[in-house]
Length: 491
Image (cartoon, rainbow, N blue to C red; front, side, top):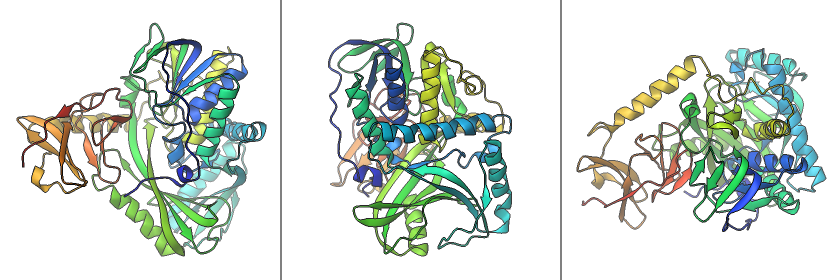
């Protein structure tokens, strides 16, 4: 199964050079997604020198595998945002959407940005509480929710709509932002992975060179390395599918299902054809091997309700959910000059803009009303924190000899499994030609046992979300090191 988002299909490849020499800047930013590049833009505007490094290509990580929706309301965790924080959070998110809109105009970024309504709908009377809560939160944020009857090819018992939200192609926006950052004097480097961070000296080391900075921003969706906050966040994957349809099947806007399973749907016109995009089927990272079934469920949903001509694009993304429902933006436990931006749950595009403003304010000596509430050094209390601790303990138990291992003979082509070899757990993958390849099954971050992700052919860590390609290369943090290669077992 080929995994590519509709946003990636609509964007050409970027070509920024890798870092090949030591440099010194005011701020080193690790991560070339929407958070990192918006940070770079805001900091350049206040006179800082900035370098951005991206392990792959700008915007192709979580940003390029998102929904492309921008909204003040928060996602499936809106029930967790308490009334005390809701006004400031929702107002900051509204300002974040406005910032993205302004930059598309100021920099001439052609990314299809458009204002549109946001709607949450319930298919039965049992969804009424969720809709009422969304309405109440909208009012706390200064928004005006209205009862609505959206024209959807789905059962709708009741719905509420908030106008003035937005949609765009997030990858095209991020690429345009990178272009502006480069033209404005910022340094942008692709295929440049952080290998180590000396927090005391504020030095970022890459395979070929080092960046010396006064401040380091870790904008990699979850910070690289080992931090307490990794244990305070649940890590989940969700899936997206875009299908070409016979005619426009949805009105303009963002549509959320208030019931179970939670799904988000929207329309998108690309390559001369109308598409319906659906995102959902989330689960804990590493909890499912048959991840292709998650994609298949979304395809079934589209075919059941829409006139599908073809299913053209499939993708997935990861999100990190803090135990108290609030993101973590600001100085880290590594020091006041090592800033992080993480814990966005499923609302990362808008929170990326919030984070950029907060970080620019901090480095510019300005107070931000959310600085204390979102401080990454806080201890998020609640039952979710206990759930994360219990999950981690459960995953470490899988390192007991014999637990969770399989017979190598049962591994199908393009499949993978954890196998016991001489008392060591190894991660074994059989390629399309039937050849076996093996790496250590022990995650290089905190030594949990990885699991096979069938849809994306990757090894995923269920503890803190590190992901590795089939050959062991790191493709998503917080791990910094690859899985070591091991001899392939005999059959």
